[in-house]
Length: 537
Image (cartoon, rainbow, N blue to C red; front, side, top):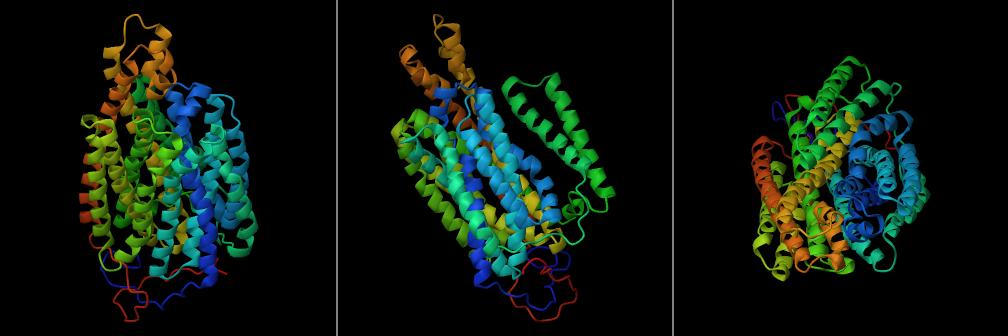
């Protein structure tokens, strides 16, 4: 079931038209846009701050990647748990608790004195963020019962998250022009204050009517399944395959199998595994995961390219992110409207094809002069963000629309889990792939007389090489830049091929899904349950 259509026989649902949302619901959506934008902002806020952060905290290449993606991985790990917790204690209550925790941990991150403590603070931010995200989508599901209004509302939701991701580098650049790198985290404080003031007034409360107590064994198994697999991705790319990665892979798979079996046996599972029986639901999740992986990798590499290769200051680099942000904004709002006339699978396929073209443009950067590469990088990145806006809006609505109202919490948690995990995996996979290429290239140009400590620093990554620019032999920094761009080109070529294949999958697997007319009154041969209005008042 997706967008109100019967997946098995193609007939429309024979129900009384659902109530259409009014001014109160749209005002509530505006309030939900605040934490949504904040979460997207915090995914990318540090990308332009990385060079200054590297000068201050001196992280290794592995620590730098953990600083970037510990937040996303912890969100991905805890979303399912927080989705179930929100069902038990109330979505609005969990939203406000998560917002308070997010503010406190943001302050801890802003004043972290070392790389390891910053990684820990980013992980805590991820757990707090996981408390925020499921609440927003489930509240939207309960506030907007009409399919077309819900599609537009989810488009706004997805656009605000993606807009936060796009605005992160710009906001970070503006703050870095006047303050230290930690100031980027303090943006959360005023947003949380506004949410605490307006949330109780504009947002309804919702909790599942028959939610059992939280199953702690399921929580432990879900974390034990995700985190070892994350370690495998990062460690194998950094150091190759070994005993530790093999053991982690076996542990992750074993815990994943145990988790699925336990969910099937529970009367009130942490995650409803039955949702995966719907093909549109499963395919939409897969498209979101792979598509966001490409976005995460491009975001990490392009922001470094603008600053460390071309040499743009943070504010200027942030301003060059405006065209991609505009492309994403137009796609996020426009895609649900286009999908009323063109099937969503085809709209997503077309946008993914444009994203693949964007990755292809980035793959050409190694053969272009730096200043000419600036225009190509921004053009390619804009196409990638155009795909992001469409993917996040329509993909999310496909997932939410495919699930019965009673399982909206599980569907919301899964949708957000794969999006966060996709971005974090993109950082890990493409960041690590770029590092592998970088190290193989720069090793050929290291002078024998270079001190061992300096040689190790240069091999760590371009950001550490840049921080030692004054003490490096002439020409070595330029070679480091060329090595980084070579890695960026390889990673972008891999992403282009993957996203192009994903466009074909979307066109084929989702070709039968369509958004129904908002007020279809004709009887149908197969009835489907009406959406629940619980929690709308």
